[in-house]
Amino acid sequence: MKKIIIIGGGIAGLSAGIFARKNGFESEILEKNRRLGGECTGWDRQGYHIDGCIHWLVGTKTGTPIHDLWITVGALDGVEIFNPESFLAFEHDGVTVHFYRDLDRLKSSWLELSPEDKGAIEDFCQAIKRLQSYEIPVEKPEDLMTLMQRIRLMISLKDAGMVMKKYGKVSLKDYASTFKHPALKAALASFLPESYSASFIFFALAAFTRGQASIPYGGSRALAMRMVERYLSLGGTIEAPCEAIDLNIDHKKISQVICHNGKIFEANYVIAACDAHVLYERLLKGKYSDHDFQKRYSNPADYPLASQILVTLGYEGTADNLPRSLSFPVTPFEIHQSPIDRLTITHYGHEPAFAPEGHTLITCAINQFHEDYDAWDALAQDSDAYYQEKERIANAVHQAIETHFPLMKGKLKVLDVATPKTYERYCNAYRGAFMPFLPTVQGKMMTHTGRIKDLDNLFLTGQWLQPPGGLPVAVVAGKDTIMRICKQEKKPFISC
Ligand SMILES: Cc1cc2nc3c(=O)[nH]c(=O)nc-3n(C[C@H](O)[C@H](O)[C@H](O)COP(=O)(O)OP(=O)(O)OC[C@H]3O[C@@H](n4cnc5c(N)ncnc54)[C@H](O)[C@@H]3O)c2cc1C
Image 1: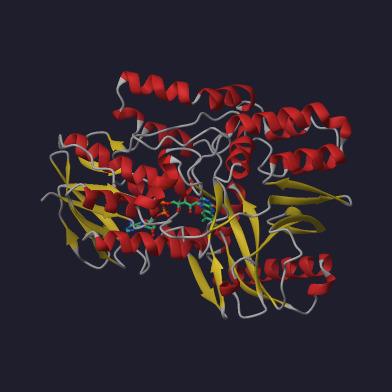
Image 2: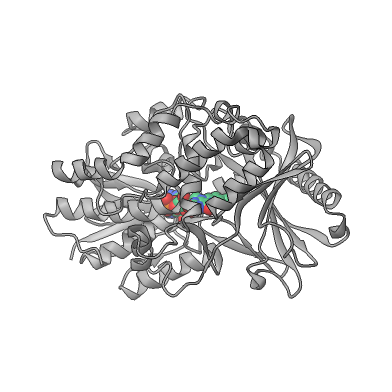
């Protein structure tokens, strides 16, 4: 039996491992952390469980190809789905804009707020409706398709193509300015930084409003653990903690994977299911760099990466009367000399087990970009300064929430603060990024096969292969990599 070594036990590595076993390969996952799941994780603090990942999982709608894939890898087997009423509620100057799941409700609430935006609102809802038929292509990657299959794919993506054509090169800022009401303008512009493509918002809301992007009960860590169980039940093996630090290369092949704990692994194939930058720069030492990735790494203006600060609080009370995610203005405070004048909080009232009885977990995520990462990186050189800054931000967030919700006064406590350096340390995530290069107006989208030029038995997989990344891309990419290996082995691929 041929053997595959998989470096990284995140969702892509687990997906690759599961399909490797289903297709008759010996499989061993090497994971740097004790626990598998990668960025799809959660952690426990002071009686609370902090969910560190899933705000929405594309693939929660039964009967769709991506849902079937989640079932095949064990992630959603027998799991109840929580369908939040709204994606986001956005407070602005005394009014609240709701991004409701029910598109008719969204439309009527927006029309009521701003009748003069009728045309823009109708166009907005029409584009979302049009995209509701969009399915993430799951069956096979484009490079393995026949010409006919590619044509069929293009036809199936017709509606997505039209939305991309209309909005792909329109910045979020410009799109938001087509609305007249200041609250609608502000709500739309708040989704992502202004240079990002407006198309993102349509794909996100189309998936959400058709029930395809909801939240599995139990959270992110539980989802990853179900995949681990599926992998182990199929006979896969795991070495953890075990960080790959070097690759020996012999005649265009990886002959050995060298690990931090001194162990050496040999296999017929090696799949790098870790961060792409770790593969190209640390493991391959820059000797096999890839033009497409290099172009993006060296141009952060057109290819920005997003990370975040995550402040988590425990609330002695219930938050049933609050929207699940709420964005509200605050008295400005600074982070790295940039003013923070609004916060978005999310509560986990739907998961009573995430908090002691009668309490609720609340998270507050603050987006961080290129310069922010540099500032955190510099700060982290001095651990006292780093911890003081985390504490200062946590206190500012704590105070801002108490000011906005006087009923919460004295009932909140800070549980944890994660920064871009946390994601970098935990998952080796490049610059702490939790998604790959997102579509901007200037940047071109990249899809990558994961093949490494001049190396025959090494494949990159994971969310970096395709925008916008995230969990669905990771699970599809892991499967696709095994399809490519089956093709190389000239054997049929078994998908279920
Ligand atoms: C805060 C946050 C919120 C998110 N929210 C969502 C969401 O709501 N919906 C969504 O779809 N996606 C979300 N994502 C993104 C999603 O988590 C990722 O897209 C997905 O988990 C990536 O999976 P992956 O397997 O490609 O990579 P990773 O999860 O990064 O897995 C890579 C694994 O490789 C390991 N590794 C790295 N280097 C080595 C090495 N040298 N040797 C051994 N092991 C190594 C890492 O420890 C890790 O376990 C979020 C991410 C974060 C951080």
